[in-house]
Image (cartoon, rainbow, N blue to C red; front, side, top):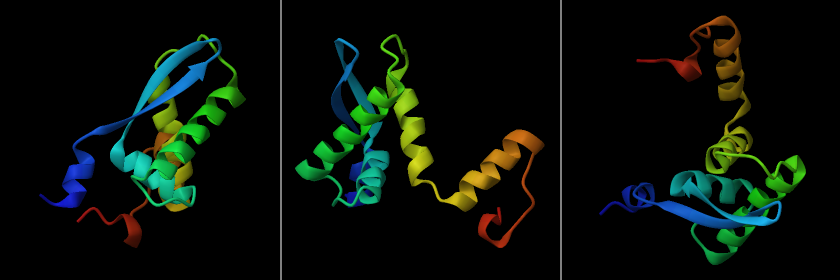
Length: 110
């Protein structure tokens, strides 16, 4: 099996604290791997898991919303916002506000 397909076949679980309660967050392995690389770690290693877990916990702590629901979905969005490059995020924001972005060589749909 292609190692990239194996990575796409499962999620990683992270045990976090949300206020006084414990919660489990899942991230697609590819998102967790990209986030690990962004944070300076080799993906799919114990150190990467610990580093990503600490980053996720910090995001929860910074926003300090113990009543938050859909924690995994919110943290996935937070992770994507830090790993997606500026060109893609700018085009997405343009699309949200104004409709389809102008075609550029980097976003050629063909």
